[in-house]
Structures are given as C-alpha cells and as structure tokens.
Amino acid sequence: PVIEIGAFAGDGMYQEHGGCPSGGVVVKMGYIKGKQCLVVANDATVKAGAWFPITGKKNLRAQEIAIENKLPIIYLVDSAGVYLPMQDEIFPDKEHFGRIFRNNAVMSSMGITQIAAVMGSCVAGGAYLPIMSDEALIVDKTGSIFLAGSYLVKAAIGETIDNETLGGATTHTEISGVTDYKAKDDKEALDTIKNIIDKIGDYDKAGFSRIKAEKPTENPQDIYG
Image 1 (cartoon, rainbow, N blue to C red):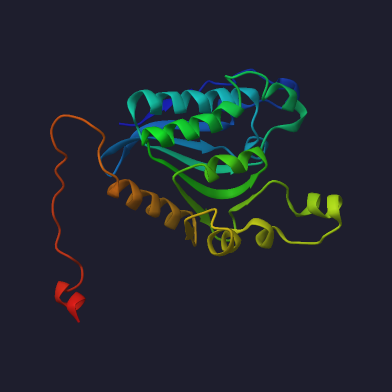
Image 2: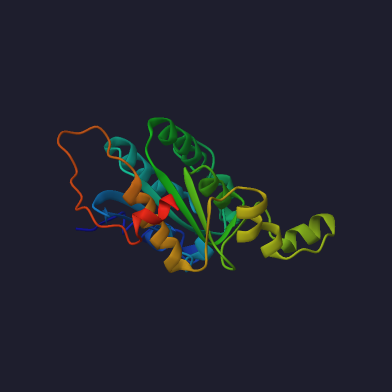
C-alpha cells in the first residue's frame, strides 16, 4: 500500500503568489524492494520546485516520520531553492527551512538511510539537501547542483560558463565528488535507488527478513580465472 502524506498542504495559501498546491512537494510512504520507505519529491511544476514556508514544514514532517519510525527516506530533488519573494519567512525559527539540514545530520548519526536523486536543477538552498544525504545520484544532462546558476555567475563576476560545467553530472561525479552515482536518465536513477535499498540491512526488530536466493547470472568459476 502507498500512503500520501500532506496532499492538502498549502491549499488556499499564497494566492497572491500563484498558490502552492500540495506545498510544492509530494510525500509518499510505501515499499521499495520489500522495505518500507518515505519518498519526498519536489514538484517542479510549482514555481520550479521552489521552497515556500509550507514546503519546509511538509519536508520537516516527512523527516519527523522517518526519525520516529526509523524509515529510509528518499529525496527526488528538482528545486530552484528558496522562493525569494518570501525568503524572510523561510528561516526565522527552528521549525523552518534550516532545520531540514540539521535533521539530515541527526538521521545520519542515527543510521537512518537517506538517498537523494538530483533529477533537475538544484540551486542554492535546494542544493544542500542532496549533498548531506548518505547516497547521492545525479541524472546526466538534466541534473545540476550549484549555489548560483550561470547567469548569476556572469552578473556577479563576469565569467561565462555553462550550467553543465558549473555543476552538472560529470563535474560532481568525476571532479568534486559531491555525488556518488551518475545516471543516464531518470529510469536508471530510480533503478539505482532500488538497488541501494535492496542492499541496506534491517534496523533492530524481531524475526528475520527472508529473501529468495537466486543463482548468479555469470559462472562463479570465472572469478578464479
């Protein structure tokens, strides 16, 4: 079964800014490879995935559920960062945007698996979350991570650079080491997440998780040369 959390978050809010349906983020609880997980996905159709105050609160609620129940959490990131016209309302208290990154550190210390897939542009505040996850993936040609895009770089220091060189998949998997995996498309990124989830162990609980054994795809004797 799949349960959506906070579908009505943001309903009727921020109408003067065009609204923020579902808080601009989709949160679902379900099973991946037999393990119960939380999935948090930015909705790029809502202000390019920008963070409104309610977006931060919905993400915090998802993290709270993951912490309380020791559930792996998967972030599908495609975010323009903080919604700048409301940036003064994003950070003011401990239940706002900045606490998300504090929770990243807390969950890491608790051994709660966090996986992030960068599937679009992740700018400024939207760039911190995948970097602080345990495993980070980036989709080639569509995913990017940087504090400021190429146009702002040009305006600030006069340097001309393209977004792919500035913070694309090759830059972050082969040079900076920010991300762990480079996927050729969204499907490969999601398949990689499934493989990672399949390999993580269980948290303390009674009983055992039994998985049907499969024969190796290749001849084991080939290992010995």
